[in-house]
Length: 453
Image (tube, rainbow, N blue to C red):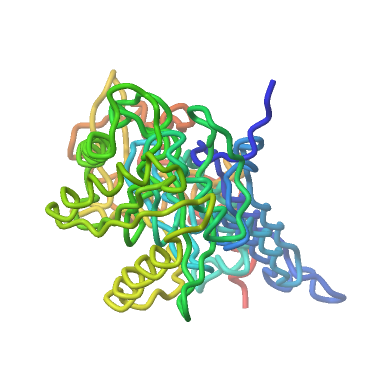
């Protein structure tokens, strides 16, 4: 089976690192058996971020390894020592990579060397008991757990960043033109779909240097998925200009320069979004006498359409200098009109939610509590520690969850569900319970042993 060398569309599964747990620790030294809480915080998990690297030209690495995860945060320890932050994972992508959510929404359009997009944030580290101490809770016997990192499925789609795009039928000579205009050495042969990937070449005309790309496989019906053109049309979206490469020496029946040009323009129009690109026309292969005669025959028709025409030959290099300087002129004008590009760093954030910080509804005989804060607090709670559960109950009560449940008619013993689907926690509703009271003999989360002066 052939191994691909160029991949311009992949689905990637990314996950931020999990935050480290906080620790419950009490400072101990001679003659001070209870010197106070000194448990450190857990370190945050590492982020997964995409970064544009000009030296990367394909997404093949992510085609081969589509699952990526950042490093986990370290756990806290005693003596106020916090855990280490997890190692962030930097995934390099080509210039011009579009990032989409699994819903199809565009998350980022990465253009410009160094541009970054954080696609999965690491989980926050849990607080140690030193950070949870207060005047009313002098020695918490619990700490908070670290939160899991974000998990996300994204689609990466490469749109080649080139100044000029060459479009035309297969075997029109696009690859030959790039080879003649630049030092690129694409595969060239005389049969359809020779080019299976966009070829890029760097061209210098005077003091202007620019990039040229060809679009493989454009045929009639490409915009509807025929041939290979539908897969590669997106690579011309960023081009400052389009050059129609027309084969004037074709022997195929029913084809001529004007009909070829009209067919390709029709496909570009159906694809959409390219109407504002300046067009140039390269009538190729004029080293063949019959092709030269045909190019002269259609010159007046093309000029009537307002198109700049160049009779060229990739084989003899005739007309290539004039074509290169015309492309440079268009590119220079486009660059002058564009604002300067600066690298940016984008961090995905959830959309702000208006109104109440949580919601409660009765569903299948259970009370379901939804909201970013309650769900996060449940994730942070060590349910093996009664005092930690009591602290959670205090937080929910301060948020107003218990009072709202009573207003909605909740009764002791009812099931209250908090958490994501498939990973939720079910509580027996009992607002009067003092979690951890049998351990501390005091208010939830408070140690009476340190109340003595």
